[in-house]
Length: 74
Image (tube, rainbow, N blue to C red; front, side):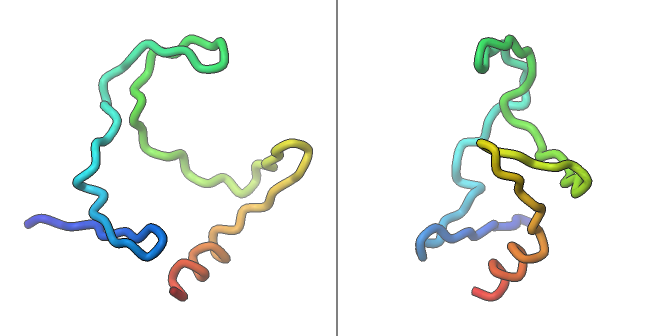
């Protein structure tokens, strides 16, 4: 059984399974001066709504439910 994930970008449907994905093999790399030896591809971390997010002095709130409602409305 094959599953096809159809996504849309600006009204154009595409199949994410057809695109290259980052390797799960550990790779030594540098990001902002810090050395890492970890896979470039990884699963996203779970959302922790207790963590306060800040970017350039602005505080952000988790809006997962509002974002899901907006996506599913279209």
